[in-house]
Image (tube, rainbow, N blue to C red; front, side, top):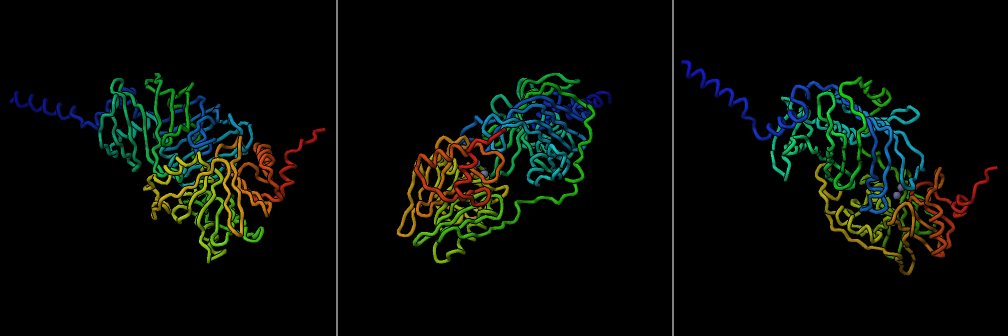
Length: 485
Ligand SMILES: [Zn+2]
Ligand SMILES: [Zn+2]
């Protein structure tokens, strides 16, 4: 009798300690962070410090990583129990930013399904559902929140794997969000958390936050260094100088103006206006990014496939209406910046060849081949090969009825991959971002003027990708010194 009882105790003890390999990873992480009970008791986290943000999709080339926003006054507050987070930071560009060099304060929050931004004026606006999805995931890009969620009985753990000096486990948390958590084999502390998301330009991407410089705070181990990458691009590096557990987090609820605003489920419907600027040259406007269509003897050419599928497919459809008998065969791409190249995949899906600066070729070849399974776009649904026509310095596109010259814009502080398009007979220039009529700051206009002079172009009219058509004299005027007395 006594013997059986002892055997039963032994069996029960074995059952308790025999965690599955996936559970063991989570248990090890919880123990290393301060113990399961301590982790589960956490209500709020406040991380204060400094750091930097990268300039994803907007740097000098796609490979460049020099442009950064220095972050000061960084404060990330996580209300663990209520699934809310707010980040406050002041960012200062270390490059010639289109909004100017002054520091900008940002407040970026998420409260359940609602993501919101608060402007320095105090005005709150609702951000898109895609932003909300990424910010909801970001809450769990921290060792405490992800391990806490992984300990929840509603979480599902799967795919335990050994990767070098790490072990990783897939965690589907109770609300259905999926993460990969990796821990160090030696310290058992979490080394990184990753989750998948859709990026309109890059397709299916992993957002991964790595953790380092753990320090002791209120009976927990917290990382003082957090580095976040989208795909291979570093988007945030945070160095915590003060961390507080269970401090009063304040009210992280979405401001009423954002909470009551309608959900933004995607880009706005396209509105494409048409203006014939010269015979066979049309300016397609109506929203934030313009395009231009030019007629040749037997085909049409588009300048700029901007933003996203919605805008670019509408622009292409409108272009085809202009001369139904002539095929639209190619698109000239002003530069690689994500808001200007966001329609390149759509253009390829419509069979257009892409004329772009030589430095963009590797990126576009990669971008066309990338998987878009999380949010299938036009090219994912209708795959086509990329036909690419690189421009190093100059390209002339000419037939019996039309001559177009494409030039690299040299030395622009806005980017190394910029092309401007010139119609010599009509004395029309098309450019993106380097001069936007009406913009408060014009950090790139002097260089544009230099390029126009160096190429000896005779320009009467500028068709900007942002803003309204303007006479060349207006560009010249913005470059004259302003009298201050
Ligand atoms: Zn740009
Ligand atoms: Zn732009």
